[in-house]
Length: 292
Image (cartoon, rainbow, N blue to C red; front, side, top):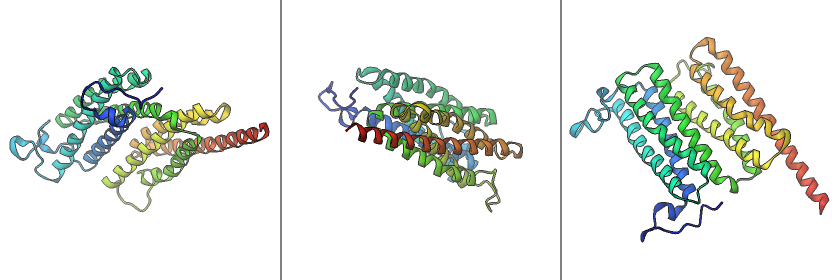
C-alpha cells in the first residue's frame, strides 16, 4: 500500500501532500513523546501546582496567559507543547479517516488516540485542580497509551521500508538502554543521594526509547522472521510495560525486587531475540547461497 502518491484535492498543496502521511504521523509521535517528558519534568520539579493552580491559564502576563516564574514555566511549557500535540493528533486522525490510501489499522489506532485525547486533557486539568496520586497515575498511563497507539501506527506505515537490520538495531538499542534505566532508577544507589528531577526525566526518556525499541523489534521482526526467533520479540513489549510499572514504584523498597526481576527478564528476552534472529539470518543467507 502506497503512502507517497497523492492527488491534491485543492489548488494549494497541503502539508500531507508535500511530505506524506508517514511524516505527519512521525511528527505527531515526536510531539506526544515530548509532551510526556515535559509532563514528567513538571511533576519532578514540583511544578504541577504552579500557575497558581489555574487551568488553562497560568499566573503571569495579560489575562494570566503566561508563566510568572520558573516553576510556572515548566507547567506552562508542558501545556503549550501538549496543545500542539493535540492538534497533531486530531489532524493525523482526520487525515487517516479521509484518505483512502491509509491502512485501516492505522486509521483505527489514530482515531482511538484522538478519542483518548479529550480524556487526557481532562485528566491534565484535574492534576492542577486536585493533584492526587491516582489522577497523576491515570494521566501518565493515558499518555503512554496514546503514545503506544501512535507508535504502533507509525511502525505500520513505515514497515514496508524496514528490514531485519532494523530489528537488530532495535534490539541492540534496547539492550544498551537497560543498564542506563537501572542506574537511573531509585532502586539502585549509584552514588546519588536523591532521585533528582534530572534523573527522573532522563530515566523516562530512556523508558520511552526502550518501549519504542521493543515495539519496533516485535512488529518488524514478526514480518521478517519466523519460528522461535519471533517468540522473544513478541514477549519484549509486555515486559517493558512491567518494567515501566515497577520502575515508577521503585522508590518503594518493597518493589525494588520485582523491578530488578523484570529488568533481568527483559535483558534475557532481548538477548535471546538477538541470538535467534541472527541465527535465522545466517541460515537464510546459507540457504540462498546453496540455491544459486
